[in-house]
Image 1 (cartoon, rainbow, N blue to C red):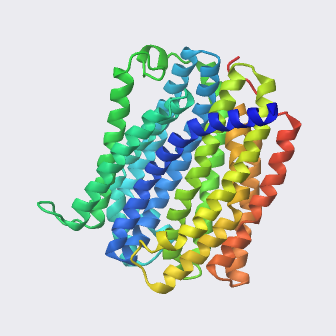
Image 2: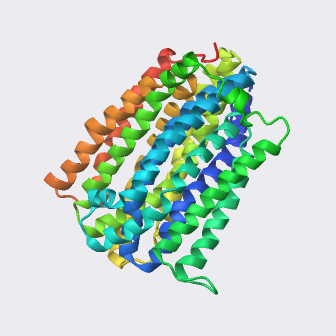
Image 3: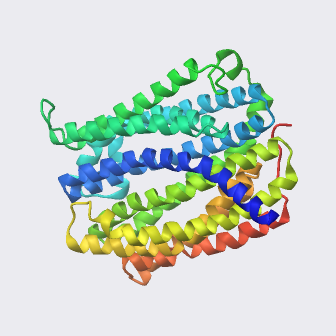
Length: 451
């Protein structure tokens, strides 16, 4: 009975944190989904153009995930140890690094958008539309970068509701702006794909302004930016931060490049497959958010327990959270299979692309239970415990030595369909699972970063 009560207690704690994280992440990713959906009403060329152009933001998101994940590891442990000065130093380092890196990418996106477009396609219509989108949306990458850090700061200190509220407002602005500017409603001009880019940029700017306003007005806010304390970090603090964070950044960046290589491989099947991959990716990301939200909640609690040095409770918590991750993965997979035709039906596409996309999503659903355990193990337990190098080796090793080669082999040598290629490439997830479970059982991954 005691074990059952502990299980329920831990599950309740995870769910309380996870639900706002899931909803907030869903709303953040819905910006891309809404853009694709609404611009998709203009036709398959526009869908492909935004899909290709969005690959740069996908890379940026992976870099931001790396920086913010690293920051979250420190902030959650500092919060557990009740060390607010440590939180301030972490915020200062994160803001500085984010501004420098994402600023350079934003400049590249604005000045050389055609270079990115030609990496994926030589279709002049797609390239031309993608250039228009990138030149407008480029500046908003900086807004998104700083908002990422604010969001992880709130979540790592246990406040998952504030980022959710801000995301609701930002998404509402994006949806309304898309409707007015893409289709030219009322007094607003019909700007098509450019309208979608303008709307997205405005929503991201408002999102950042809201974070700044709330952190400065809320009394006792632990992540309020302070020039006195946030920039008080020394060389030792920076070295410690990057020693832990750089493997996460490298992990996310090269995993993202590998994921783009998947799309390059699938695009060789044909133009229909390219459009289908964009649709499948948009829908898959929405369902993965549920799993990632769960893992995010697990990571917050893991960090708090390590910071408070409650190691016995951490071992029990890790075992239970992994079991629940399998259940969560099965439920999400079933939901995806049921709703796949509904989501694909929202896009204005040819019937054969619709059927291809639904079949591909069913292949994605087959691997979700394993993916769920993998994400919980890597994000929720290993990284949150300060062990960032091992997950990097596992993720990069499996995607580059197994997943990507299998995708190209499936398409070029076996000449299989898109759903079959998805299925074959998923072998990497099973290999990843075996390595992670062995690592967690060894208990050699726990590192208290507050000392």
